[in-house]
Image 1 (cartoon, rainbow over the protein chains, first blue to last red):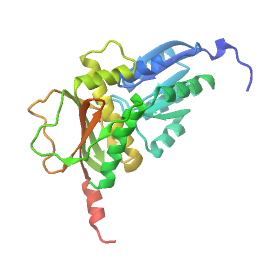
Image 2 (image 1 turned 90 degrees about the vertical axis):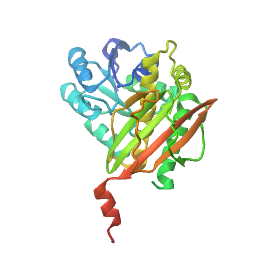
Image 3 (image 1 turned 180 degrees about the vertical axis):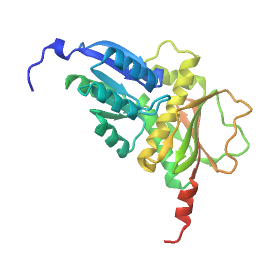
Image 4 (image 1 turned 60 degrees about the vertical axis):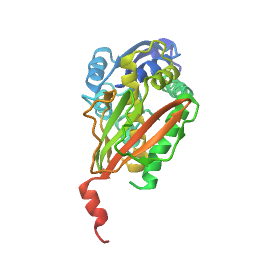
Length: 130
Length: 160
């Protein structure tokens, strides 16, 4: 891996989840100074609007959401910006869905319910490996 | 529903409270719902479609939801937070069940019911299983109403 400056790896994070409790919980677990700005979306349509406007480097993505589901969002985001680091955080616990998410471009897949420690580790991995 | 299928949901309840709070919930033996009301202050409902049809309900008192929200780190807690969390708990337990039922176990986004509205009706043609949950001093219930979709039932009924 080449040496990267903090500036190159700093970035914007988009948190997508239809639960406001989960969105705030994820935001509270962002400790890295690599994340310079956080946006939140409550459904897939809002997520795509924010993604197209701000082009975030990192995304956490729920799957079961109104308006547009998370798998569709992942495909659309990857088509627009393939180097996006994206982590699914979903209740859907079946292997088929996890595989499909990864095939569409997700880097990580975390199954809810998560402990604070689970979330800390997953978010740190998502951001550190950028 | 088979005992094995009901156990999938019991395991989901236990996992939810253990992961989120670090404290296990106690689950009493499931029973078939009668005419008695089991809905509490807030109820999250997830519709099920695909190879199964029906619904999963999680119903809780406001006090339990407040304490769970605090475990998520919330400090200022209002009515809308209770609505949000009760739907999220129902969604999580129903979504986790796909690990057993597979990706054709399709779950809806949550619908949230407040209080005990008269129009809440549970499917009469299905057995409605009630799973009583105790976490700390609080009581809540998971209610499962599920059947295999028609084509799936027919396939199961056919001789091999």
